[in-house]
Each structure stands twice: as C-alpha cells, then as structure tokens.
Length: 400
Ligand SMILES: Cc1cc2nc3c(=O)[nH]c(=O)nc-3n(C[C@H](O)[C@H](O)[C@H](O)COP(=O)(O)OP(=O)(O)OC[C@H]3O[C@@H](n4cnc5c(N)ncnc54)[C@H](O)[C@@H]3O)c2cc1C
Image (cartoon, rainbow, N blue to C red):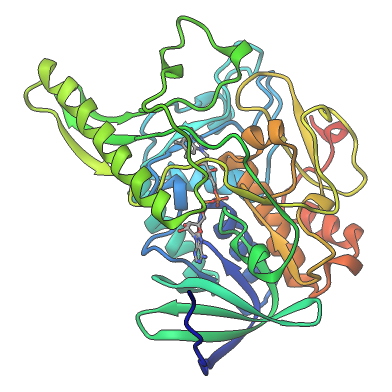
C-alpha cells in the first residue's frame, strides 16, 4: 500500500558544487572544490564530520605508502593524515615519515597513524569553514530532481523540513552511493554482506584504548590460527541498505560492545566504555558501476587517466593507479563519486574502501566537480594538471 503525496518543495539556495556526505571522501571533495573557488555546500546527516572515520570509531589512518619505503598517496590524503595528528597521535606514530628522519626501508613502519576522532572532526570542520564550504549538518539528501541526464536539484530533509538546492555538479560521498541510486545511475551491491563490528573506546587501568571488536572479512586463504580477529561476532551478515536491518545491526553491535566490556571488567574493575559509534559500522554497501571498473589484478598498471595512487593496506607491495573512469557513470553527466562507493571489483573493494583511498578519490572528484557539470566531456589532462599542482602524484613511474 502506498500514499500519494503532493509536495511543493522550497528551493533554498543554489550552489556550484554539492557534496553529499561528510566522511573522508566528502571532506576531501568539498575542500578540493572550494579551493578551486567554487561555491560549495556539504550535506551531512550527522552532526559531525568524518563518517566512519570519526562517528564510526574507525581511527586508524591506513598507509599512504607501499610498505617498501615509497609514498604513493599524496595531496589531501597526506594533508588530512597530518591534520588528524596535529595535536598528537593516539598510536602508530611513524617518525620516519612525519619528521623526514631515518630510513624508509622495507622493515620500517608504514606511513599510517591512529588519531583521535573527536579532534579530527573538530579540525576538519574548522578547515572546511576556513576554506569557505557551507556545512549543513543534520541534513539528509533524500532525493534528486533530474533535468534530462543531469541532476538539477538535491532534495534534503532536516529540522527545517524538506528543501531543494539547485546544483551545478554533485559529488556522491555518502559511502552508500545514495545519490547515484536516486538519480538512476547504474549501481551494484556487496553480495556477500558485511560481518558485525563493534569498535569502541574504553578507559581503564591500561589507559584510553581503541577496541577493534569484529574482524574485517579476511578471505579464507589469509586466515591464520594466530589471527584471533577472524572470529565472527554473530552468524549473519548485513547489507547496510535497509532501515530495519541497520537498526538490528546497531543493537547487535551495542550488545557486542557490552559483552566485551563485561569481559574486560573481570580483569579491570575500573574499565568503562567512553565512546561508542553513532553510525553503523558497515564496510561495503553499494557502489557505482562506472565507466571503468578497476580490478585487484591491475596492480602496477599505468593508466593514462590516473587521478592518483593508492596502496594495499593488507600487504606490502601492490600499488594501484586509479583511473578517472572509476568515479562516474555517463548515465548521469554531472554526478561523480568519492570514497568507498567508486567503481572497483568485489575483491579490490576491500582495499579501496579505506581512509587514504577515500581521500585520494575525494580530492579528484571535488576538483573535477569544480571544473565542469559534464564529466563525459571533462579534460582529464587539465584535471591531472590541477591535481599535480596540488601535490598529487599520478603515476607509479614518478614515485621517488
Ligand atoms: C568496522 C570497520 C573497520 C574499519 N577499519 C578501517 C581502518 O582501520 N582504517 C581505514 O582506513 N579504514 C577502515 N575502515 C573503512 C573506512 O573507515 C571507511 O570505508 C571510510 O572511512 C569511508 O569513508 P567515506 O567518506 O567513503 O564514507 P563514510 O565514512 O561512510 O562517510 C559517508 C558520510 O555520508 C553521510 N551520509 C550518508 N548518506 C547520506 C545522505 N543520504 N545524506 C547526507 N549524508 C549522508 C554519513 O553520515 C557519513 O558521514 C573500516 C570500516 C569499518 C566499518
């Protein structure tokens, strides 16, 4: 059964670039767009920036390097890593990278840090405001209005009600490809579903601590007896795309946190949970089917339209150049994706979803969105020129 609603929606404002979602993908995109001088708005459904990387208690900024002493991700990916620990890292402080001392050989620590989520959210917000981005918190992008094969308006809902924003181009940084779905662009979902996670912070005798409860979905061949993290918390999986299921997932996650806390209490009567996630900890949900789908087999491959590089957080060695075609579908000409919803195959998704990759694709998407409202006719050479001007290294052959 349905009800028919005739809603008149007020057009609140007009922006050159609308970024939907304020995780690492969206922060990077909004920053890049505003730095190109474009009037930029960022819609975020929560009341803090950072997405999974703050509200989701996922505070390990995975490596910018290949594990053999070569940095591969630059630009905003490095800027945000440094910002995240500008008032102190929580752990994994890689002196050899940050201070330019020591060697960066095979056995050195990777260029990876653990940061404080609260501080990062505040610092990222300040940075975006200083760069002129309009941040709209508590604002859900709930739909789009199309004009042919372009999005003309983003429809939002917040405390003020339902509002429309006229837009030039749109960055889908929702992590879930919500905007692409609304606009009718081709998307795909994570078939096998996600395992339950319950990462949280506690404070006790051993200090303030990140508890990584719930493993990532390690492929069978990578599982080892020593790797205790491969134990599943519950025997079911989650799509992350259904309202009822997300509430169940959240309650199960809370229960896992509570059980873990009770276990810890046996050794430490003072231990307390101090921060739990305020967003569902789900890794892979929906992605765009883009003009190009990057595969896990394409390591060390030269792409003429590369917009930057990423490494593999799971192992030393692999480097991927990211082709521009992974960010958009020609079906919706002024929509581009950033973060964990870009076009990659199922195996590579687990590599590309992490924070540095989201920042790399965010910078490219935001820069491109500032240049055009038709990604099918964008000059990729010009995009690459601007990215390089802003610190990005595009090709593996150019790594020092
Ligand atoms: C349990 C777990 C552990 C992980 N471990 C690590 C790790 O150790 N290191 C690492 O680097 N990565 C890790 N990851 C992955 C990483 O945290 C995320 O994939 C990455 O942060 C995603 O960034 P994003 O910007 O693409 O999306 P998100 O962080 O999901 O951000 C999307 C933002 O958009 C907002 N949003 C969504 N829909 C809408 C809408 N319709 N309207 C308005 N706003 C919307 C959300 O509130 C959110 O703020 C982990 C993930 C999980 C779940």
